Image 1 (cartoon, one colour):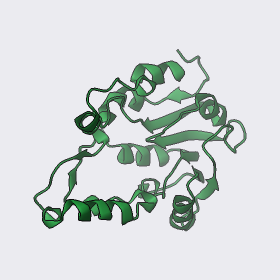
Image 2 (cartoon, one colour):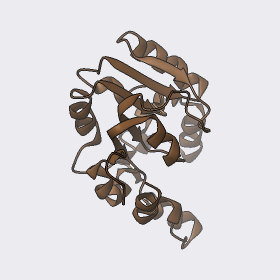
Image 3 (cartoon, rainbow, N blue to C red):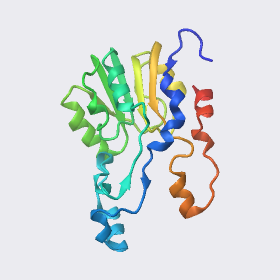
Image 4 (cartoon, rainbow, N blue to C red):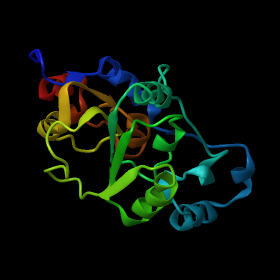
Length: 208
């Protein structure tokens, strides 16, 4: 349990398991892709750009279910009340850019060069400072700078670093990948798979 004065882990973390449905559940489509051969579909997959996590080429080829609580909306609401915000691994800034009003101080990190360029262009125009970070500790910020840190679909979470850059009483709001996310697809091709306990909500709570 976190002591008084330590950063508050958002209640959204309690809905961690709901994020399992956020991964695309790929199905055979009867839409525009149905006339393409297998080889053509593979070629599309190999040549389509995903910079900024743009998966628009999957339109009509895959279906997706999202958590009922809506990460982007929750984040935008929190940002409107914050004074200093940080978005970790922002991608191309496509989700952060949906925020209606940024805090006075707003920063974002990204490591992949194509996404870094997109995020800098997209978010820089709105006054967001986009910083290159290689997803390894330490975070390139001083202690107790932000009252809100957000993180969508993290791969590795350095809780000590998040705690360090948060002000006392600050909030961490995230949409983590569920420990059984994408299992239907994986097990279709690979057979039964063990749960990824590193992504289990109990593991996240213990780390926080």
